[in-house]
Length: 81
Image (cartoon, rainbow, N blue to C red; front, side):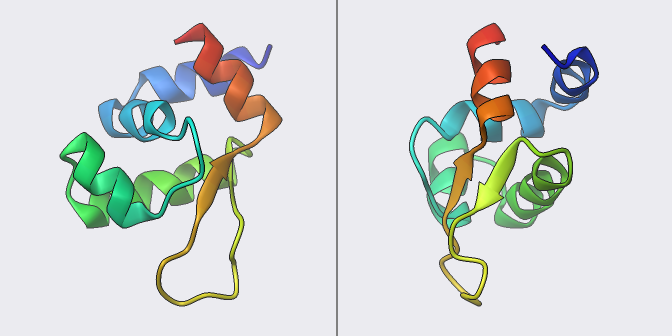
């Protein structure tokens, strides 16, 4: 278990909600609708989560409608939440 990554999630309500919403691959717009978080905040949280290796973009070449999913580490953290 990566306790630093776990702590990173707990320090931000938005990161936690975004991670919790990714039980299946979704677009940032879907996450925003589901969580009630504004789209720019979802995008920022996804970028932070991706930098920590918790989520990955499945469609990185797309400009719009990118799809994000949890990595193995992201799934481990999700089980702890």
